[in-house]
Length: 84
Image (cartoon, rainbow, N blue to C red; front, side, top):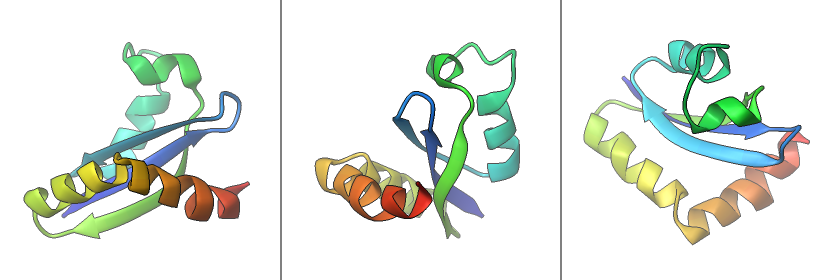
């Protein structure tokens, strides 16, 4: 199973969209002190949304959709309003 997920940093007001085959492990990695990627400077990250897919290709398509202008609009206007 593959998950598309949206993380939100309440302190920095940033979102991050990605996909993974292990959502729990990926969330831990984003918040881990040894993280050296872009997400390190905006920790801590909170999972605010996810969708599950059977196929990797389906998850990749949905991730691309969420990263589009309409996808980000959905996140900010629907998902994020429920999280704050």
